[in-house]
Amino acid sequence: MKTTKSEKLFKKALNLIPGGVNSPVRAFKAVNSKPLFITKASGSKIWDADGNKFIDYVMSWGPLILGHAHPEVISAVKNVLKNGTSYGAPTEIEVKLAELIKKMMPSVELVRMVNSGTEATMSAIRLARAYTGRKKIIKFEGCYHGHADSFLVKAGSGATTLGIPSSPGVPDEMAGLTLNAKFNDINSVEKLVKENKNEIACIIVEPVPGNMGVVLPEDNFLLKLRQICDEEKILLIFDEVITGFRLAPGGAQEFFGVKADLTTLGKIIGGGFPVGAYGGKKEIMELVAPSGPVYQAGTLSGNPVAMTAGYTTLKILYENRKRIYKQLEEKAKTLAENFKAISKKNNVKIQINQIASMMTVFFAESEVKDYGTALKSDTNKFARFFNLMLENGVYLPPSQFEAMFLSTAHSDDDIEKTIIAFENSIKKLTL
Ligand SMILES: *Cc1c(COP(=O)(O)O)cnc(C)c1O
Image (cartoon, rainbow, N blue to C red; front, side):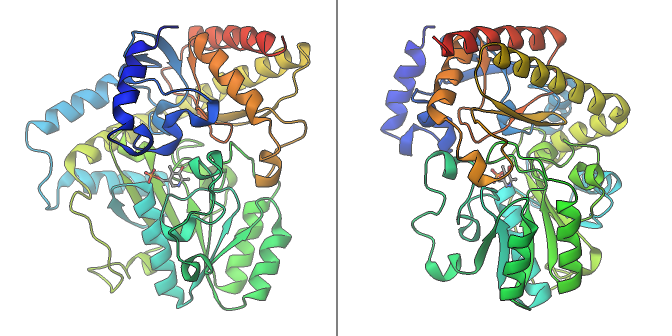
């Protein structure tokens, strides 16, 4: 595979941007390689600067559930661009998006738009602290909620990938207010709640963690969190930045039948543009300025471009929900089943966690059900696997601790080619 143009661009970028990238995992550091510079994308495919073409399973890390450059999304955005890009004033489209979010995810009675998932989670915990008058928060090891100070304590995603889950620069005073429980271990939550009685403002959780690789919640884990929160007057925040509108039309809350007090959103609701949102019970959300005293603002929040892309995406998902979610799940299942069979045949130990259209192939001996078991994966083997898949035309997330995403644009032919690429890669891996 020729990569001379990407290499040249990376060399230049290294002198201008920290690590040559604007978000850490992109650098391909974890897979002992150098990043490809992307020039265009369409449907399920991306092309790099040297003209290599790949079937993409990163999908911009989750937003593109309809595939790259979906014609309806692009055309809606083109139309809105003609009338300007941002006014710093209310528009009809943001009201329409809020209405559709509420319709699809009924626990979100009021919603505030922001510009990234990080802003959404950061604002949601400020609100939870204001509402409860308490300072501490509980999160889970390996979950990622963006890069605000409160969350960079045993955080997932790039922080785990690069071995910096607890970042320098976060004051101890701040980190001390963030307590870490173990995902799928309700006792670890009960213990923290007991030790910090009447001090916990909220429990924030990715209902299906995607940022330590995909991990599935075990029986009733989310329901038990709900019960603890009700008993202890703690707010339950579901960080559905990934799972929202991906697991089901109503996100993880619909999928598992558990309602959150506050929900954070992002990725899919921006249709490929920078976006985030937080919402939930009216009584809580009414504390947000200007209806209440909890301050939060944004120059570009709710701008018509992102709102239009998000609204168009959600509308397509909603109108075709009976078909889309089933088809996405079937494609992911086909991949997972074939991957399992091929690795078994070749005596390569893998664990696949898959739910709806998200999955991770872990090079691990035993089941991955939390951060500790995820970290037992053979990351060197993953790195070799990643590079082999790339050479076979498949672009995976360049880290063991991330999720592969399917989109409606992934065709049966893509799935077939991916399975062939997997077989070739696994065979070479054993040589
Ligand atoms: C991506 C992500 C975030 C952060 O969103 P950004 O838009 O990158 O700031 C927060 N929570 C989860 C679960 C995410 O996957």
